[in-house]
Image: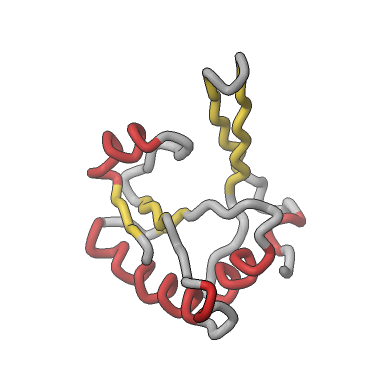
Amino acid sequence: MQWLFGAAENQFVRRMGGFPELGKQEALLENAYTPAKYRGLGIMSAAMALIAERAEDLGAKDVLTFVDLNNIASLKGCQRAGFFPHLLHQKVQIGFSAFARDTFETLAADDPRRTMTF
């Protein structure tokens, strides 16, 4: 199961929280999940690649997705689907998690993290 949102859905994406506002040519692929008994078969990476191709239907040429740095299996799947590190997301929780602030840092083109192999 995966969702693909285009810039036209920015209002909804903002309400979900934790994501940047999408540019006109960006889409967000989110909630990639593979049931446990089907993991390791390449299903997620194949589905991500196919769904990302549909981003053109939303007017997007770039597709963003966010994966925790500790989720190596998902990072590998994203890499197999053609994704590479572009943005770093940091969430700062304040006041016993009553408030949260999300920041996004674009990695420079020569940043070695962009070409990491997982």
